[in-house]
Every structure is written in structure tokens, then in C-alpha cells.
Length: 298
Image (cartoon, rainbow, N blue to C red; front, side):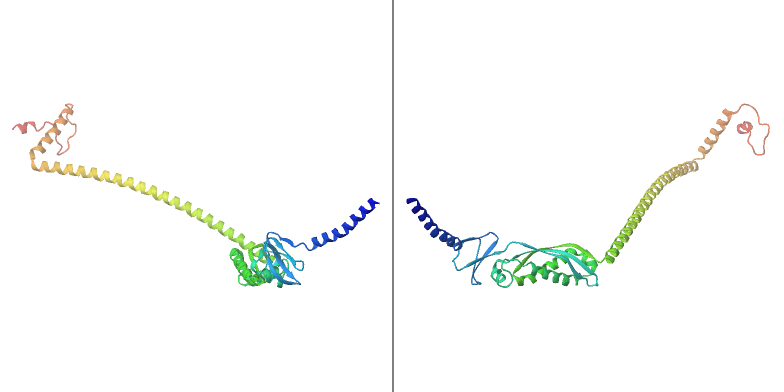
């Protein structure tokens, strides 16, 4: 009998406690907002407050909506555009963005209950890409890719500011034109490479020719310097000889005995070399050694 009564008491207690626990779980007043989110508190669909990360007290008639403010990513594949010179262009873009913390209530009310603006970002990116590429020619899009990317980023920031989003950065991928235009670009690049190769070869030949000219000029200068040196030596020698003759002639002119002394010295040398034989032939006016000895004595 006692056992049955205890069982009945346990059953009665469970009937009371379980509903209470269910009510506590359902209407527990303590809630938490995760990091990188905001808590949008609503009552009957109307926004009553924005809560930061952490614990918060929630009344039973209030509802907590978790709103993401972390960086999100939106991809646009094969966005189409046209350049100012009517060349079709296609590119894939990746946009990283986040919701401004002071715009959470506005975005929640107008655009998204969880902070996901991917569809808005994709549409805005398509429009901005078309508007930006229309300002550039096809060659400029290739040569000024960083400038084009900066223009897209600036325009997209202004456009998405309307939706309460801030753009962190934009990455462009698979930048391409039509097949015909890409083939033309490839041919142009090939021609440019050939032209540069020819120019480099010409510069090499010109450099080699200049080196040869420089070497020839250096050798010519060396030969000229050598010739000038030899000519200078010859000139100095001739000048010295001329000065010697001039001095000698001046001395002879001033002293007639010197000339006679020289003649006697010559005759003496001849006499020393004479073998005692008279010449077999005597030409008119040819002096004969020692024939005039007697005349001199007279």
C-alpha cells in the first residue's frame, strides 16, 4: 500500500515539475549573442533594440534575432561588359563585405534578417563592372588593371553604402575578351617580341661596331703618337746636326788656318794609306800625291 502511494506521489510530482521545466526552457530569460553578431530584439515584428555580443535578459514576449556583422563573400561569375571601343569583356569577381554596425536595424528592417546581402552585392557588382569598363578601351583594361580594380572598388563602395554594407575589397579573376580579340592580342605580343628581339640584335651589332671603331681609333692614335715621337726625334737630330754644321762653318769662316789644317790632316791620312805606287792613269786636274812637294818648298 505504501509503495503504491509513493509511486503516485512521484507521478504527481513529475506532472508538476515537467511542465515547469518546459516553461523554464521555453521562456528562460537569459540569452547570448555570439561574437561577430548583433542581437535584434523584436516584439511582434517591431524592432525594440540591438544587443551586442554576450549575455542578455530577454522577456517572454520578446524575440531575439541573431544578425551577422562578420565579413561575408559574394562571387560574380562571368560578369559581362563592353569597353569604350566596343570590345566585349568578361570577368569573374569576388567581393568581400560586411554590415556596418550602425546600420544593423536599417538592414534588418529593409533587406535582410540575418545580414546576408549576397544578392544585392552581386547585382550591384554587375552594374558597377559594366559602368566602369565602358570608360576604358580594351588595351587600357589590360595595361591598367590595377586602376580599373580601384575604380570598381570605389564605385561599389558608394553603391552598397545604400544597403548599409561596407566593401572590404574586390578581386578580379579570369579577365578575358572575345576569342578573336585575344588572338589579335597574342599576335601583337608576338610581333612586339620579334621587334624587340630585332632591336636588341641591332643594338648588339652597333655596340660591337662601336667597340671595333674605338679599338681602331685607339690603335691609330697609338701609331700616330709613335710616328709623332719618331718624327720629333728625327727633327731634333736634324736640328742638332744643323746646329753643329752651323757652328762648324762659323768657326771655319772665322779662322782660315783651320781649313788648311783640315786639308793637311786629310793629306796625311792619304799618305799613310799610300802603298808607294803611282797611279797608272791621271786625269786632268787630279792631284798626285807628293808631286807638289818641291813647289811647296820653293
